[in-house]
Image 1 (cartoon, rainbow, N blue to C red):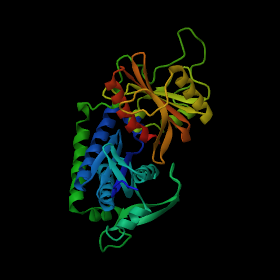
Image 2 (image 1 turned 120 degrees about the horizontal axis):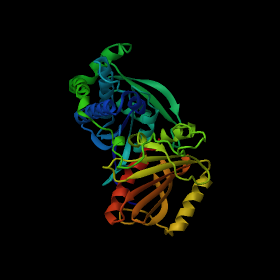
Image 3 (image 1 turned 120 degrees about the vertical axis):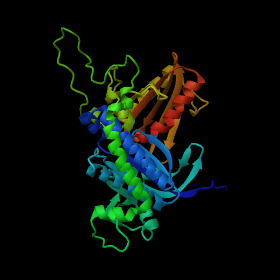
Image 4 (image 1 turned 60 degrees about the vertical axis):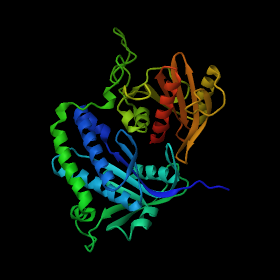
Length: 395
């Protein structure tokens, strides 16, 4: 039996925390400035530690490193920058980071393996200002880096079969007491190279905040001309005395919206389309003009059977054959899976001058559907490439 060659890497995922709330309270331009500063610092820290940015989606980073220790050092640099930006009067950058290490297979589309899925799940467990690592990372780095590992106990990570022991990483100066002040310890542990990156990043925050009026615009503001505003009222016409619909989001919509990818979330609103039987919440997200999809809908169902019924009805109506959707196959219906993180059904087809992709997250009872105007092979290839990225980031 031939086994595909693999290599051991460190995988880091980083997300901004409470970014949506920051947008609401400070406005689009300030939020875009914050995002730009955050991205610039992360990329500088990644470069300093020899990492490779595999994927960036909104405020989420997915980075691979040649070793677990370089991933940890990069994570500590990012957190130090976040703390120093606040101390310097900058915007409060709240970031959570998760790191795992393991063997993966490198493909033209990226790294494939359980290690990537675990790292993403560890990140989702991290609080603002926290770097969490697995026991694998602790074992690889505990005698190499001047850090301490605080046991956060074992966790059952979503989509991961076995429980994982997680640790919060806190830097400690070489030769210094474990109880040294956190801020001083971070400065000593980071070393010259990354510390310089942090100082540059803090300066960058000040410069970007001073230039906020230059007009950074969030992707959510780049909806196609004529698209309804997320705050536009629905279901009422002049002269009607009916009670106005509840404000968006209600409890079910809030839960659903919190799970969609972060850079899509701010462009979502309540869908005003008729709802199939069993739908608990339905949100429509109008994407940026630069995206490979125009609009994506997310719908949560009360049961998996109700979700399956909706997909089956559509497959029957469109006459979609069994098969696997791929860059060269734009009309098929089958299954999809990414490690043990997500799995479900995938349907692709073209009709009435548009290209469609529908996919389910069976464990979460969520159905997503995306459309792109146009029905050429290039339209499908663009939508398929977009789907392969966005499918991973349901929370």
